[in-house]
Length: 59
Image 1: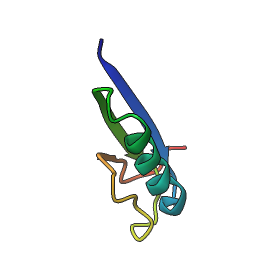
Image 2: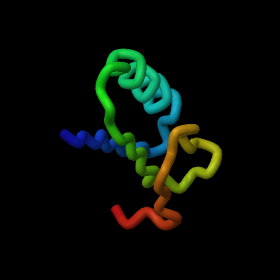
Image 3: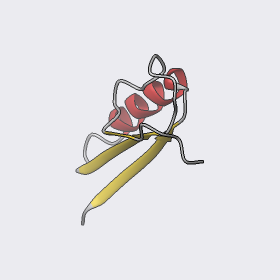
């Protein structure tokens, strides 16, 4: 079984980063892919786990 976890970050890495860490910690026995999309415009507020970034927020 393949599982992909998708998370959207919008200028709140202080929430996204602990969420990702919690998901990884609680699911060590499950093989899954993690995708973190950043849809914000503030380059200083990118999650350290961001895998995809939209340069322009299209709302």
